[in-house]
Length: 280
Image (cartoon, rainbow, N blue to C red; front, side, top):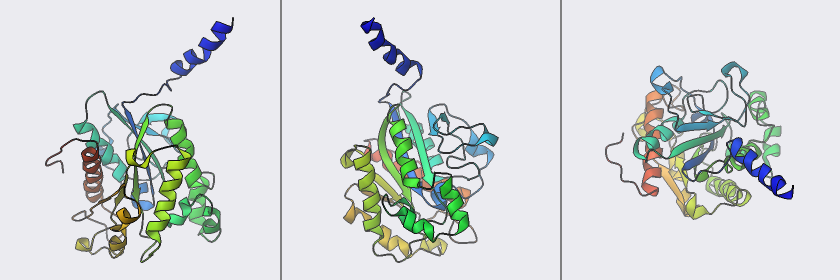
């Protein structure tokens, strides 16, 4: 009887599809509106690839999605009514150059308009107390704690695959914040500790905000973003040069988002040891 009691949990573990697959690469994505997905996605963005997966962060009954469940990754990858995210073309670029046995999984917990402080493990509530009501409603979809929701999903994902990297796009709401790199380091270090990850094996890819060559409203923030590797040795900056934006000069167009996401993918492929030429 004892033998069967020991075997039963193992059978259930495999039956439920949560046996860890080392060829299932998981990436954690967080930030504000550009990472969340601002531009409307188009038909070309919704072509399914069964090797590209997303772990649903919130319930979306209108899309027949339930939180904590893996789905084929088609936009929106964040919440129910968000748009095209760099994470979309990050994943598609990765799969175009990785062996067929490899799958990509995305977890995207982002909040439009938010400062990096919303992901502060210990002080996010202080920030949210003075946040506008529309932002509080977004955060409420993550139980009022986006960081905790990201960690909760990441721990669930670790049963299925291996976390290989962290993608960040944030900064428009922290313009000229000389402490931004320190704040990002705090979030990253907490993720590494809470998920028992080694920084050298889990790089941080941080994208620039809309570039000066597009007359970006917050382009000056890119000078601060450029110094992130000084605070986090495993950080890499993704250029937004040439990535088109909308009239608000804050949000990338769908075309600009695709280009930026592709660049995230190229950098991650390089870090994994793959040489990619003319991928954009």
